[in-house]
Amino acid sequence: MAEEKYLAEYEKSATGNYLKRSRGLLKNIISQGAVAKTLTQEESGSVIMVAMTGNSDIAVTLPAKKAGLNYKFVNTLTPSGSGDLVITGEVADTIVAISTGDADADGAKNLLADTVTIEAAATGGEVIEFECDGSFWYCTVIQDVVGSVTFAG
Image (tube, rainbow, N blue to C red):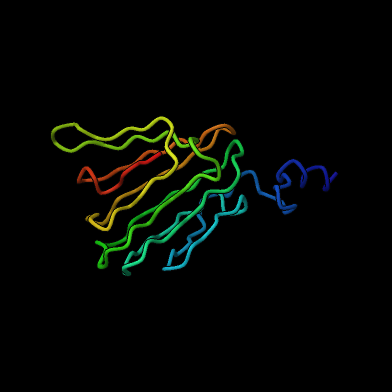
């Protein structure tokens, strides 16, 4: 009986580890430094705190699409270097992205993006959220200056 309850709360990931269906109230925090990173399914639900201080671009790759996976990126400060943070889907044309607009309501949108980039010209405080339905990554961006976060692909 206890094993059945355990199996109902967890499911196996693509790498063979078990994923908890609900993480509860505390979220896992990941500090994103100056090295490239590929997120894992096990890190779903995490908040990635981004501090861009260097002059080289930093690459972050989303894991294979699976319904229910989600990640949140927070740009913790105004970048001090010329490097960007580039978030890429593992397959091209799978990010459906939209960003808030400024006072002129001219935010950006890309329905088949390959990348979402926090630009070196960002002001700090930008928030990017990814939710997956198994086919696409749905990306919502909150920014105070249009162009702080861009979409390409």
